[in-house]
Image 1 (cartoon, rainbow, N blue to C red):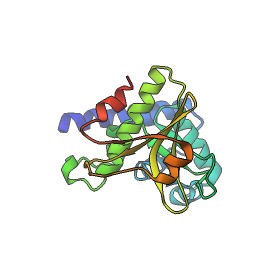
Image 2: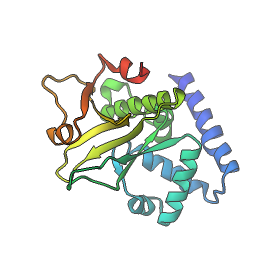
Image 3: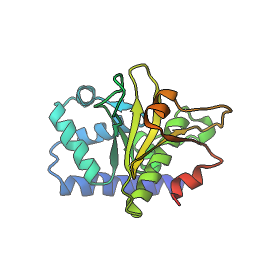
Image 4: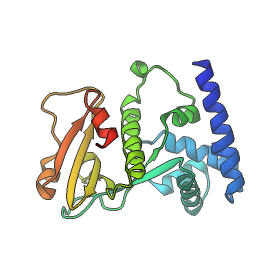
Length: 208
């Protein structure tokens, strides 16, 4: 574990901060540090720029600017909420994920074994979505990617719209019987759906 942590630390210090700070107009590196930590702790959750601004003690516009810089530097990526038909859908919120779980763990300094972690569900979701996004980009897929949620807390972890078809995916670290995605979503969009767990995740991240 020592070598891996050392490599990650060097990567974070050299690329995440040194390179990005030198290439971008960032005048408050300590704010970037706090912002990345706050985002790392919120993976899988909807983000509120005003709340992030309060957390890192800057204005909302600075938060937006720094997140855009992190996105252009391939540190983070955003998912927008999917909405077409349903009145109670959440329409404007976003989630922010980190491209690499190792970077995420280094930023928050948390390397406990997976079986002891209380954030294993968030790590699993971040891993699957980031690998899917990477494969989509590598294979030049035309898929558009989202998450879906209603005001009644019905949710789909990951949505793809491709070729006029809607696909919904739910991520589970532990496989559960009779697990289904919300009927509100599947019926409204005639969506194909699938539960992704440790037994079948390879086909999801390969996109064959």
